[in-house]
Length: 131
Image 1 (tube, one colour):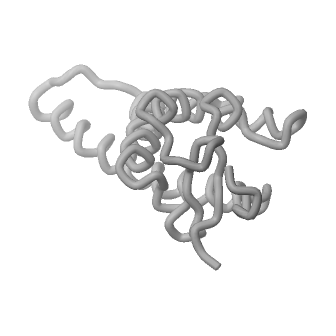
Image 2 (image 1 turned 120 degrees about the horizontal axis):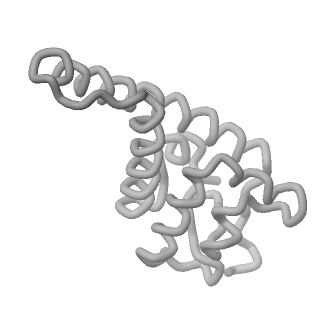
């Protein structure tokens, strides 16, 4: 990692979390309601909303970060995911990030190492893309 690369603090991370959660809630609710149409009229097996929320969280995080190295919230806050050496993370790192980020305990890593658990275990860092 270039020593002059600006890493991101907790305030931006919290903003990313809240914005992404809003986007994920909206998207997962749309998918949930679409699926319930099939439950009602074609007698598909019903599932609780939580299944849709967590599946959407994983898919949203994995696909956006794999394709763009950033989610919608990171695009708004002008931040990007990078590996510790400053390069684009590989697919395994994105898989680890998405899987751990879907868990509810990911932010507890901030308490002892100033990084969420999904950054710690995937060996990634969040950096600024703007000035």
